[in-house]
Amino acid sequence: MKITALGLAYLLVGVGFFVSLATDSIQLFTAVAVGILGLIIVSLVIIIGREGLVTAENKVISVFVLLAMGLLFALYEFTTLSSEIVFGIVFILGVIVPHLLLQYTNYGTTE
Image (tube, one colour):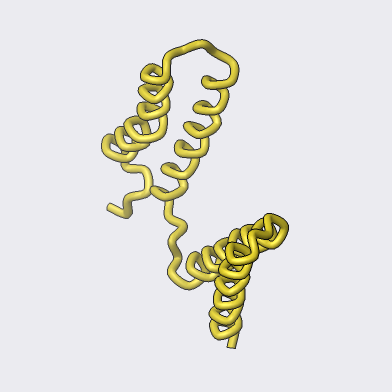
């Protein structure tokens, strides 16, 4: 029953999105965008609850990705570094560091 309600909510949001584009209504488009975000969050909660996607590795990767996103914003707003240097730093923090941490430690393994 819950999945059916979620499917109908996605259908209604899709219709609302179409109507907002057809009528050129920015208020309706904004409401539909918020609805889409809410439905995505609900869907992720359902998936995580059913599938058990929260593992130690995913936690490490998530933390480093969030840190990298915050660092990206901070470096662009508060420094005059070139975009190549900023993306290099963010890539190292968001991709390389968690990879090395998981590769060379036993964190999250059941061995």
